[in-house]
Amino acid sequence: MHSCFVTGTDTGAGKTLASASLLHALRMAGHRAVGMKPVASGCERTVQGWRNEDALALQAASTSTPAYEDVNPFALPQPLAPELAAADAGVAVELGPMLEAYARLRASAECVVVEGVGGWAAPLSATLDQIDLVRALDLPVVLVVGLRLGCINHARLTARAIAADGARLIGWIASDVDPAMARADDNFHMLQQRLPVPCWGRLPHRARPDARELAAGLRLPT
Image (cartoon, rainbow, N blue to C red):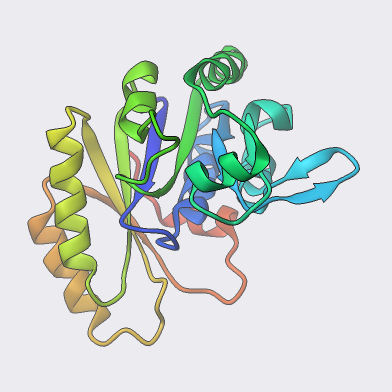
């Protein structure tokens, strides 16, 4: 595996933890790997500019410390859907800057793990969907399934949507986002039986998760 696009069954499915864990797993396998969060809403103003917590986590998990502006070309202040957050900020989210940032990251690493926003069908702008970015970058897709009530339906519908859009789903990662979920193991096994691609691992719930530690539990394709 080289580069991939990470999507989720919904907001809060655990995409950032899974993406950071993937980066550490790739590095443990001897690859130079960097993370990217092309569009991030919900940022804090710092002396360096607007910064997003998820994008910073991917930057920290990368082989080197890539420029933040390449990791997160569109840092939108408001914690809203990107289309709304961009409108509030007076920003036009366009494909060009994202492709240029990706090219710079790709030039310095073997693998780029690109994390999307929300679920697969969440738009990036009024005229841009996530599939447009996936097509432009020609990336396979990894699905993160947040284990909670309704996850089987959400996972199966997302897998179908990815296929219908012409993208290539290559694997999925389970994330125990709800520690109180009833019969979580049974739901996990049902997903293993019903999703059309292999499971790369299951990230257990932790009060303070460590992506480097969790990376050891992932099984990447060779």
